[in-house]
Amino acid sequence: MTPNFFRFRQHQKRFWITLCTLALLLSTTPIAVAGYRPPPRPSAPGRGTTTPTGVRGGCGGEAKVPLTALAPVKHVGQTTSSHPTVAWFVPDQKSYSIELTLFEATEKGRGKILYTTKLPSKAGIMTFSLPSDQPGLIVGKQYLWQVAMVCNPNRPSQDKWVETAMEVMPVPPDLKTKLASTTNPLQRSQLYGAAGFWYDALAEALKAPAANALRLDLLKSLSQLEVAEQQTRLATIAALLEQRP
Image (cartoon, rainbow, N blue to C red; front, side, top):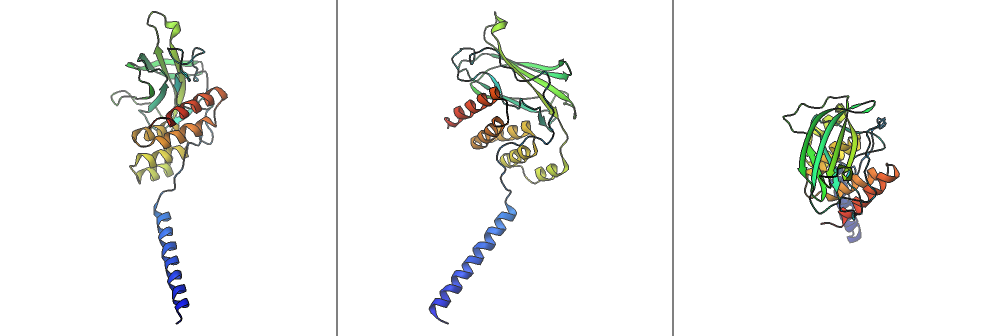
């Protein structure tokens, strides 16, 4: 056996070992699904859609972006949770009172109030989950959630507010199987996003402190699907988040 032939066999052996190792890794590692894909047949938004009030940004009037619901506007965002998490972006560094209200959705818009609470605003992304001691939302029904920032308690007309819809859907069997295989928030967010469940995808991404890249992917992918006004808002928010550690 010549030295050249021996070296060839050694290279060939290392090649096949590397190839087999790579195949094993690909077969056991979940494929990352970046961003958000809307459901195949999403519901069209009714009268309850995200509507920022005022021409300028926040209560101070100097913000680059208004109070913004981090949710679909062009179609109704879906969730599988009976106690979902909603998120919005606050542009103001100064704290103001926030009023969050959950309504039943009707053909005419808002139905009866199901839940309301007050909390102080905080600059950046804020979240709120329906408390576990409250009645759960019903699968197959639509709801509206509204966030109002009280700029001046003596002048309600100066409030900034947004309102958008959500729909509660059952978990598809294939998604349920995939979710059962992981407790990792990043992987679960990717699974929810690929299946069209916006609220669940964002909620999982927000659980992980080091998931800023995934949150940006979600916002950017959603902005590409949105109406022009919401597209601009989400793109601006993503740019602001990129500047932060």
